[in-house]
Amino acid sequence: MTDAPATTTEDTAEAFRPEARAPRGFADKRARDLRAERAILEAVSTVYERHGFEALDTGAFEYADALGKFLPDADRPNEGVFALQDDDEQWMALRYDLTAPLARFAAQNWETLAKPFRRYAYGPVWRNEKPGPGRFREFIQCDADTVGSARPEADAEIIAMAVAGLEAAGLPRGSAVLKINNRKLLNGLLTAAGVETQGQKLAVLRAVDKLDRLGVEGVRLLLGEGRLDDSGAFTKGAGLVGKATDAVLDFVQAGSGGRGETLAKLANVIGGSAEGDEGLNELSLIDAALKSLGVADDQAMFEPSIVRGLEYYTGAVFEAELLLSTLDEKGNKVSFGSIGGGGRYDDLVARFTGQQTPATGFSFGVSRLASALRAAGREPGGTARGPVVVIVFDQAHMGEYFSVASELRNAGIAAEVYLGTSGLRPQMKYADRRMAPAAIMLGGDEIAAGTVTIKDLDLGRQLASGVADNAAWKAERPGQQTIPRAELVAAVRRIIAGGETGQ
Image (tube, rainbow, N blue to C red; front, side):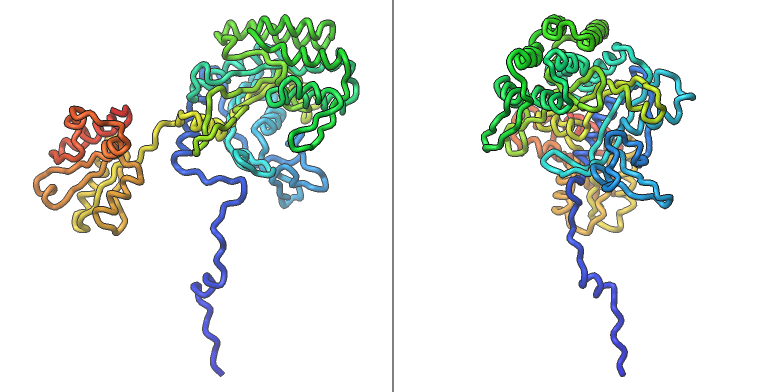
């Protein structure tokens, strides 16, 4: 009887070859994307630290019952979050945002913290939701929060930081605006309009939230019997009639003009509601603080139509909106809308302690902001730059090649020796694909003469794109030059500087 042949690794591999694919909603990021996100995080973090906020990093997992409004259903513990059961049978979930972990941390360490506790944090968050264009299951957020202060000035400081953070990230004044509202105004409006049931309140607020998309008449329909859209689908309305509808429409249209003018209009609409008056007073104090902080009306405005987190926020709410025209990779206009938001949430820490603890904060959607900046023609982190590539001609000279790379690295210049097996032309193509500013060529003749040959790849790319057609400029910057070895670092630095300035 003959023994059956042994199964080899190759046989197993041939029997099953998994399809190379990334899970839906999880994006692979190359250097360009990572550089953009890093640039935004560094810029915004600098703003937060300048305002005295402490960096904090919490773990990726939280116990599921600590996630507040994102607590999974008892029968479906993975609903909305990515959850698993630990060996002690407790459910853990990847953090849905950075605020719930902050509330847990504050409650757990409250006695040892300097209060108010001012912290900022950044990192990935995960949401088990249906992915779509621009909607991912994993993305980066960057938050700043103040826990332990009920003063409206704490809200104003968060807003001022958000304004400064947007500018630091690459959106100069006029490119974005912070829109501010107060949930107490909305509650006062609903009281004045005679809205009592929770279902009707939610219907009114959802109608208000659609002002930008549907306009005044669309909102009017949703406040009344309902609206039939272009597809033929009917959305049931809130059922308001007469003066109640007019009051809501007057409210949402009060946002034109400066902050002071908007407050006056809102006072006429809300008039007499105790909770509405409280909200107006808070906005007035926020306005005064913003003026002292140098935040102008065109940078942060009061906008009554802003509705965020109906069951989450308790006071001021704010949202950052991109004002720049943005295009996708095919040149089509695309709307990003909100690129960040936040507000006051005074009930979150109380879930752990039973005592109301005031808190306010703002969150940048870093991945979304990076995409928006790129779509607006403002590449975060600048143009991609690869390392200087040292071309390999002869295995016998590898020591010289590595010596050149080390010399450049020691001077603070990124460099690599080509470690493939291809000839000169593929190596030059490799250097170009790496977006290398220059290629260093060092053959036997150069080594014997103590020289190096440098090819300016940045210049080649600029000439190919028609950026530079000035003969005098081209004469001053040769595309290829052979120079003494001692001048290598200085020559490469000139090439890099010229590529960065687009000379």
